[in-house]
Length: 176
Image (tube, rainbow, N blue to C red; front, side, top):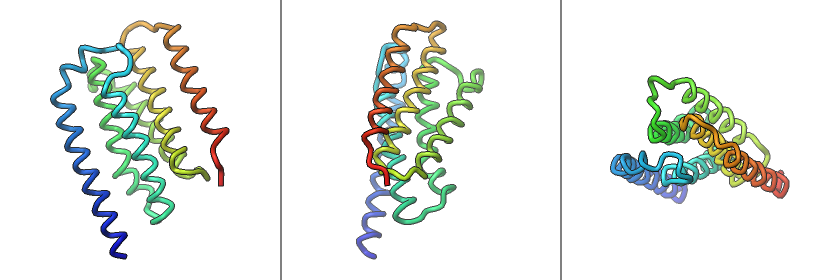
């Protein structure tokens, strides 16, 4: 039991330090990120993808191993995902007050995928990857809409790559 308590304490400690670091990083890099709107992958996108993947995989581990309730997992692991999504919307040049519909649509879609992949009979790595790919799909769609024009060639290439990675992951995964 002591080993579990120590691991849980370490998990919470790492989560708090990571959240503090990412909050400070976001505050200091906010002006830098707004200058690269639509310039491909920027640090907010990469850190957001890694965070969504890690949080979803961790949530599935806690659901399977410890039997945590879904509402608790949603509070602990989905709220940081909402924070990254809103940070992306702001760095894209959108106001969360004026453009609340894409924000709400993205949050509802990401929450549905989060809940769906938690109950899949597969490994947590696959759940994290699929959640991160859907996060990327929503983010890229919002970015294209925020730019005011859609570069169809670039958008189709990004969407095709996301679907290819997702299909490869789904077909090569070990299902329980």
